[in-house]
Structures are given as C-alpha cells and as structure tokens.
Amino acid sequence: MSNLRPLIPLLIAAGILLAGNGLQGTLIALRGAAEGFSPTTIGLMGSAYFAGFLIGCLYIPRLLRAVGHIRAFAALAALGAAGALLLVLFVDPIAWIAIRFLSGICFSSLFTTIESWLNSAAANANRARVLAVYRIIDIVAVTGSQYMIPGLGIEGFVTFAVMAMMITLSLVPVSMADRSNPQPPAEFRLDLKGVWRISPLASIGCIAVGLTNSAFRMVGPIYGQAIGLSVSEIATFMSAGIIGGAVMQYPLGALSDRRDRRQVLLVTTIGAMVSALALSWFAGDDRNANLLLVFLFGAFAMSLYSLSAAHANDHATKDEFVQVAAGLLFFYSIGAMAGPLIASFLMQRFGPHALFSYTSVIYAALVLVTLYRMGVRAAVPAGQRRRFAVLLRTSPVFMRMARRGRAKRPAEDR
Image (tube, rainbow, N blue to C red; front, side):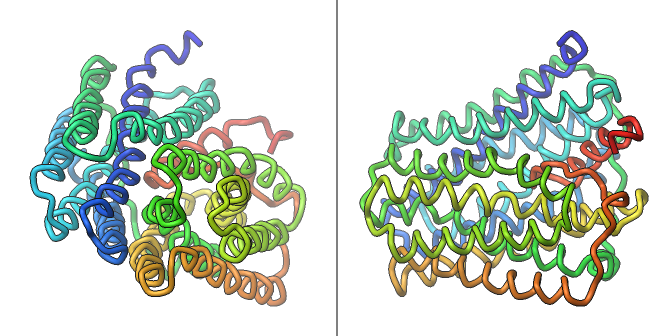
C-alpha cells in the first residue's frame, strides 16, 4: 500500500470526478423530464455530451503539452463546475444541450489528464494494483453517486450546487499531488481504416456498444420514471446495471483468454440481446423483475467493449495498441452520439419499453456480424492471444495503462 501512497491524491480526484459525472447524467435526465423536456430532447443532450467527449479525447494532448497537467486540470475543472451551475441558472433545452456538449469536452479531458498522470507516475511493480484500485473507485463512485439524487432531490438548486462543489473539490487533491508535471500523452493518431482493417468485428462491436450502452446510461432514468419507479428505485435500477457489468467482466474475460474470443463475444451479445428482450416484453412495471433483468443486461452489455477491444488487440502489434484504443474509442463515440437520440425518439413514439427493444435489435445485428466474421477469418491461436483487460471508456490512455501493466508480467503468465 505504501507504493500507492503518492498516487492517492490523484485517485481521490478521479473518484470525485467519476461520481460527479455519474450523478450529472442521471440528474439531467430526471430534472429535464420534470421540467417538461421531451424524451427526444433529453436524448439529444446525451448525444451532445458524447460529441464533446470525443473532441476532448482528441485535443487534450495538445493542451497538456502547452500548459501542463496541473494548469489544464484547474482550467477544465473550473469550466466543468461553472457548467453545472449554469444548468440550474438557465433551465432551457437549447442551453442544456450546449452545456452538455461543453461538459463532454471537460470530463473527457479531465479523465485523460488524470489517467496520463497515473500512467506516468505508476511504477511497473504497482501498475496492476493502481488499475485495480482505479476500477474499484469507478464502480463505487458511479453507483454511489446515484443515491445522492434521492437524498438531495431533483428539484431546486441543491443537487446542482453539490455537483459543482464536487468538481471544484477535485482540484484539492490534484494541487496536493506530485507536481512533477509528467510527460503529456502522445497524440492519438486516428487511423480508422487501419483499425477497421485490424478488426472489423471489434470496430462494429464498439459502434454497437456506443449505440446501446450510451442510450441506457443517458435515457435509462426516463425509462425507470415512465414505468413508475421512485427516484430511489431509479438509482437502484441504474446501479444494478453498472454492478452487473462489474461482476461479469472478469469471468467473461478470463473465459475469452482460453477460447476463441469471438465465441465468448457471441454468447455475451446473445445474453445482452435476450435480457434486453425480456426487459422489453416481460418486465412490465414490476420493480423486482426490472432490477433482476437490468442486472443481467448490465452483466452482458457492459462487458462487450472490453471483449471487443481484447479481440482487436489479438490482431494488433504492440506498436498498434494506442492506435487501436483511439480508433475503438472513436467508433464507440460515434455510436454513443447517435444512441441516446435514436432511443429517446423511439421511446417518445412507442413508449418506454422501446428502449430495450431498440437495444435488442442492435445486439441481434451484432450477433449476425459475429457469426459472419467467424466464418471468414480463422481464430487467433491461444498462444498468440493478448491477455484480457477490463477497460474504462474514459480515454485512450487507459488502454496504455492496462497494456503496460500486462507487458511487464513474466512470460509464463502471458
């Protein structure tokens, strides 16, 4: 634990930001609905967030090289906190769409800054522990923040003020961290044709994950509200999906290391499709059925991104890992920009259960693509597969952290 002590301030800042980001997505959906915004308008806010998210991932390395990690973080945190307050000062759909776009830029840039810093500061001896702690912080922060909403309420100023305070307070541990100003990350070269050539299946899989999982995260609270769940039950509903993904990623990843990874990807996609169909057709407004099925949905759906990335890395050289990470995150973001808007439009037209009908259709298409790719390309031999790594979709730097940790393991463990 002593080896991790210098990184604790950065990990605390990451936890505060992850909690604030998780809180903001759910709060905006519920408060927007309370203000009379249509589901399509709320979906457009989610799409705007991911458009900004993509821009932030692409351009933050330039800012880090220009002003350094501490100054970049301070400026971005100040903008993010101001954006949180502007949401309650200007309760207007156009203003919220613009603010969500800017929030996407801020949060993706803040996560890239922290992960770049952690990547530079973590020693090879403790890199695996840093990654494990970071993933635990992500799960605890995002799920825990959901329960701040029923505690503080969606009306009035309080929750937005707390959200702004959280973003501002993330500056405190960063200002106390090691101020060595680490080397900024290299430019993330976007060679989309190259990434597609490395793995068409992984590229399509990440687009599908963006189309579906972003819709769940951004308009899932509207689904819960529409079927009659209370605010606290909506928090539990969203948390159940996130926890399900956390529980199943390691078992599915370990299984994919031993078998043709596409087989595991196929079974996982079928599991996501079936659980989405069950939510759409059988759950109705039954609270317990929805909680159980969304846990299963999250268990399969939230694992697809890491499985797709692992499959792409099986076909990539070590020099291509960061290129693959940037390309897959781009494909995910393209899907994520469209997903909330499409899903919310369908919900507004056909009712709340259209959310999971829509996701099941996307997964059915991914099943067909996976079967086709299994027929036209041989499986990667077991001895040539890369080890599975659970990935966060916060920045391409996280892939570099995970792969550097794997690369330093003894040969017999690889």
